[in-house]
Image (cartoon, rainbow, N blue to C red; front, side, top):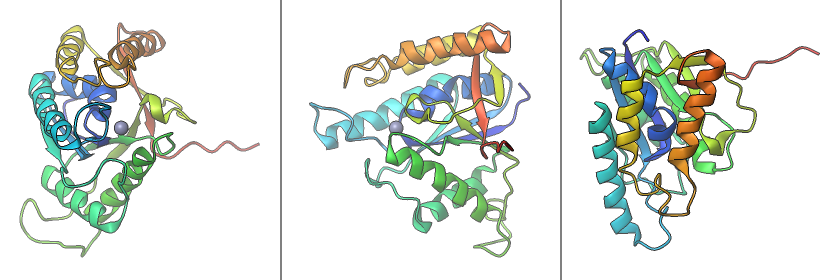
Amino acid sequence: MTPRTILAVGAHIGDMDLAAGPVLAQNVLDGGRSVLLALTPGERGHPRMSIDDYRQQKIDEAHSFAAGIGAEIIVYDDISDGFLTADDDVAARLARDIRAIRPELLLSHWPRSIHRDHEQASLAADRARFLAGLPGWEESDTAEGSRHGVGRVLRTENWEDAEGFSATAYVAIEDEARRRWREAIAGQAFARGETYGFRYIDYYDAQLTTRGALARVPAAVALADAEPRVEAL
Ligand SMILES: [Zn+2]
């Protein structure tokens, strides 16, 4: 892929790591800059650990994962898992980070999900993109404060967000990027199935293979354009 600056915004630590991680790893290998941003830690996702202990573990796992694929990581650790809302406080905070990072490509959740936080994260990313490019909104003359228009937004293929997801782009993932992603994601307890038993790593690794078959390459990640296509009947 053409190297670029990519920002992947997820509701919880792990969401974008799974669905966008191979793309972020490939982008780094190709010479680009990849940034992960989790709007909450996902600290309520463990049935046996305390919320405080699991929050810290998730944040540690997020940093290890990012280092493993050569990405940067930002976690909004003061926003509570399960209570994410796409209000203007969250959107403004995210818009400031978009202006500082200045991504050419923004990856976010598909807007329909079985998980409300994911739907809110999708809305927050859209609102933040709007604010980041809005003339006169908190503008300054600094490199990090001037407005920034994100060139493209694409949605990721998370299993929780499958309703209506329709792939419109494929990113080919080379063996080295897949290897780095697999090694890095194995450092996350929930991805290993240690919380509720879902076989995340198997699921997403198999998805790389099936999407690769459709894209006629060994492995690929599917993405979807932000606006669902409207079909005239
Ligand atoms: Zn999630």
